[in-house]
Image (cartoon, rainbow, N blue to C red; front, side, top):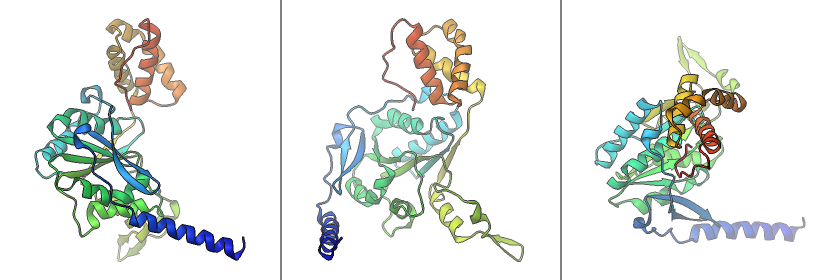
Length: 297
């Protein structure tokens, strides 16, 4: 690449940054159009897009996580009533109902003014702009980040820390953040970090890297943990969905052996796997494919 090409490349990069900074602020959507919204970003500009058909999950369809349901419901009821409530971090095994629980909360409380805004982790740098759009509104908003995890160099990491607890501009009263993750500390942990721990007069002092990772998850006031399902739990969820998909109790019981074979082939026991089995089995035994809009995520 000659000097002219380098100059043109740098000039183009500079113009791109300037255009992003000079872009007009995102316009507010029609808040009456939906109860769920998604932050969409194209060509450096973000906007809220209404979700016309949100994924409906009934809380009563989520089996075996009663304690987690009770705690997140209580927190959400406090929030929509205008009382103090916490940001929530849902962590644990995949397919155990973390994201479904958040969707179920929206399904139950949307009529009381609850709204959901889904933001991808790569767009968390735009959180301040989203906050500006909802500040002062009467609705109660949950920003939802699914499958949240970071590498240390990602810009969204510091943006999220700042919005949660580290900025001079506090979060508005009508906003909470609910996030799901397979990692409790939201960032990868490495063996060599443990070697940096210091011992001073018998006290343990973690290194700064570990402290940095812990500091983000600690900004969530409520932690909900999800654990892998045992066989009985998995079979109970299969039974529930088989009945929901139109099978009789006897037919659902007869599916037990196939349900166990299914989980062996998948190498996993989870609510998602149970829902997938029930859908397949019902489609083969009810006589025609069951058309239901509800599903397990």
